[in-house]
Each structure stands twice: as C-alpha cells, then as structure tokens.
Image (cartoon, rainbow, N blue to C red; front, side, top):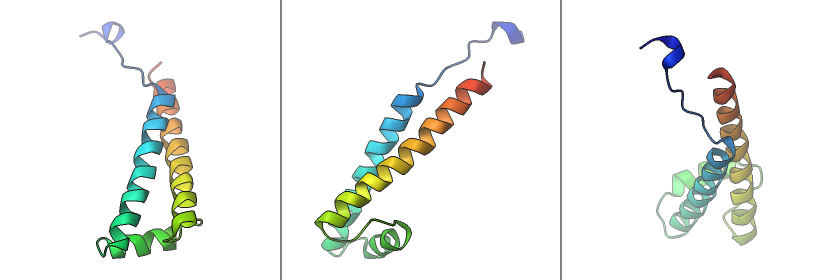
Length: 88
C-alpha cells in the first residue's frame, strides 16, 4: 500500500489517560487489601517504598490511589499525545 493511502489510527489521549488512572488506582486498592490479608505483602511493602503518599491504612491507601492515578494519567496522556503528533 502506498504511504499516502494508509489509514492511521488516532488515540484518544484523554480516554487512555483516564483508563490508566482507573486501573492504577484499582491495582493500588487490590494490593492493599491483599496485603492486609497476608497476600502480596512484598508488593505492598514495595508500594510503600516507591510511593510518597502510600501507607497501609485507610488514609494512606486513598492518597496512594490518588498518587497512582495522577502518575498513570500523566504518563499515558503524554504517550497518547506524542503518538498522535508523530502519526500526523
């Protein structure tokens, strides 16, 4: 197929960022709940080391979920935005 006739897919950067934020916050919650029941304890300890606002309590879980959502949204939105600029 000739270069000018290709159909190039565009990403919805906002939707990509929001989906990543939701998944990241959900994973943070699931790992916290699992860690409190004895599962994924090493992962919960790593989250506490790598996330500034995370702690294995209610407030720490909420702030960790917000932090994870913001980081994921920013990264994936930037990825989608750059991808769309490169495919123009």
